[in-house]
Amino acid sequence: MPPETEPRSPACRADAEALDRDDPLAPLRDAFSLPDGLVYLDGNSLGACPKRTAARVAETIGREWAHDLITSWNRAGWIDLAARIGDGIATLVGAGPGEISVGDSTSVNLYKVLHVACAMQAADRPGRRTIVSERGNFPTDLYIAESIARSFGLELLLVETNGGAGDDAAIEAALDERLSVLMLTHVDYRSGRMLDMTALTRKGHDAGGLAVWDLAHSAGAVPVDLHGAGADFAVGCGYKYLNGGPGAPAFVWAHPMHPERMDRDGTAQPLSGWLGHGSPFTFTPDYRPAAGIARFVSGTPPILAMRALECGVSVFADAEALGGMAALRAKSLALTACFLDRVEASCPGVRSVTPRDPAMRGSQASLAHDDGYAVMQALIDRGVVGDFRAGDDAAGTPNLLRFGFTPLYTRFVDAWDAAEALTDVLASGVWREPRYAKRAAVT
Ligand SMILES: *Cc1c(COP(=O)(O)O)cnc(C)c1O
Image (cartoon, rainbow, N blue to C red; front, side, top):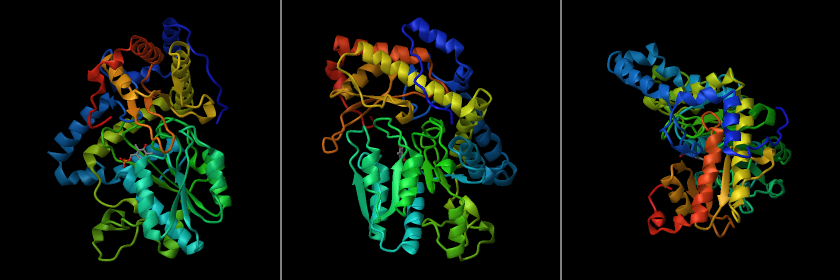
């Protein structure tokens, strides 16, 4: 990977327009349906809808399902979709072909790989006591780890996240002879801080542990090199930067040595369902896993959702011809820098919790604000869509305004206009109007 340098930021809107004109990735925006006049900065929570998705899903319903019916499992390749989409995702995260499978949710996939990792450690290194993660990790990851820790009689050891700013040294300090599994999210969902996957995986291995990585805010957003980092297992999300649609299936990766080892010693993944069987259509009463990652499939995949995810992932194949993940990363850093520079210059007192060091920054910018909820509602009212994440006093994390920058479709003028709108909302105090304080079910 090339060294990451801080790009130059625009000084006025015309500068931002010029950056858009010079942007080699600019044509990709046309692959997405985005309402006119909307600045959409929430692709880190729900990615935008590719234009090709509606037609492809309609064809899957109208022809493959309504007309061809059950023959589509073979004729339309439904049965291979999990592996085919997985191969597309593999190119984005430094995995090999045949190493990623798609299906279930991130939570369910995390349960499977964490269970397998703990089972292997119990066999190889009995007496290991801890699953190590961060207190500020995404809650579902912690809830799943709690469940696994209970099953294996382990302790879930949570390193303080230091207000979202993160502390690699504190994580490293927890990696000792008690370590069974290190489970981390590569890019923090609150602060957008990126961990050093290679260094932390190595430290985990040095301590005798295995490393499980959640790529929910990484896949399609920042370059990831699972093999280069020596990671053991990874999971990730289909509906964020991969633009697979609401509730899109998630993905799962295991280093190929682990399925081989599972074959040797008979370790099974815990949700050992029939479609992860080596020959599901022989309908034998005993479970024999499929080779490789395919064993991490449990039940029948949701084909309509898989089709939509396939469309989302296929946009990255278009991006490949325009510079691929390296170009996307350069643009993402330039977008977040543009936004943060402008906010710093025009919103006095607003503090970014997102690291300015490009090596530690994901593809989002998060700003601390006590009344972040109301401020975000006022921004949304002006056509700038980000989101709000509540802080946690116990963990010392502040209330946050989150802005996700998806380099596939976000323009420099969007970053510029969002900063201007925020400046205006804060300076005018319009966010104090009572209607902006009313909470909805989903924030
Ligand atoms: C979004 C996200 C998830 C989502 O999990 P689901 O089970 O797919 O709902 C999990 N982990 C992290 C870190 C996330 O950001």
